[in-house]
Image (cartoon, rainbow, N blue to C red; front, side, top):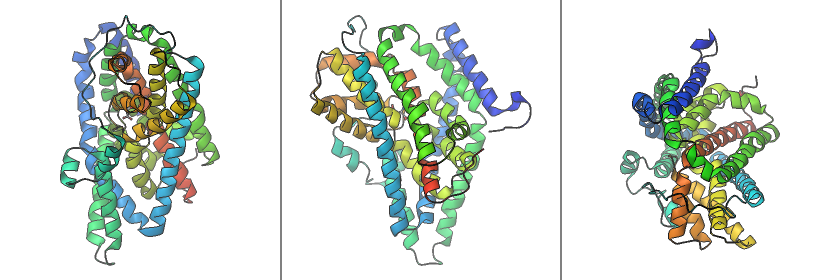
Length: 414
Ligand code: ASP
């Protein structure tokens, strides 16, 4: 982010302005703004998506190869997975407390709102499939299909394989991946210059399509999620940065502003990954070794906001249908919400579809559930924007905390 020179030339200022213009234009034109500015958002997201697969591949291979095989890789892996689990569980429990205290679904009359068609998104039939899918039968097909978990798996193996090559025989292949990664970061930096234009297109379209009316019907439900997400975003994650990482949370948040805005406007952790990688590396000051390992995996696996949402959403559905969930059923929801968040792809509305996995685990099935999910879809976009921002923030905080625990001293503290 450019931080010198006159205000109007600074990227954060331009982006803020773009958000304000996007909101005003979106409301004022009642959908027409999608024609005027929508294309800017579409081009921006396409550009980001263009770099995701080569970035994930080169970044993970470089990261794993530089960590080395064996013990140090194992240590980093255990730390990373522990962080993912800890924060996702904290988020789920926050959501659980909110939904049980506010009870947004009890007595909610959703009959007046007509159900909407569910989008066709990548869904999973069962939990085992999430794990099977990680192993690609054809790595090239996984890359061309954008199957992130499978690409990550293959990239880790490539990285480990490089460390096993006899010394002197690995220079070329290491160089190719390292320079490939640097090259992708150069391209990413260029794309990020377009952030204000992309945000203008995305925000004005989102505002125009969400509308205020839909919020009235589901206001309490939306408030419950926003409240719980805010506690996680504004209290839990900063506390972790402070206590576990001994870092100033506000400095970290400031350094991650570009990535947060991108997550908020694209609703996609995967599309945001190029920006997240660049911000954590260049602004937060985390080494390549840790960013390359923690972030690409985090974008698919670590989704605090989505985990929280799965829990609140499933219990909301139970409340609307008049079920009083037992403690055992709520515990099942906690576990399946975690798994659903791991399995959800980092794309818009992925979390909404995964909610069926959670409801089915506690026996909530039938057309009523689908109807309520359809109604929830009406307000999903803004909630998705916020939970994606929380997902990305948690990934970045994890990278910083893990880097600190590995003894890194380059973290930017002012
Ligand atoms: N859109 C979210 C993400 O990409 C996933 C979700 O729908 O919760 O992180």
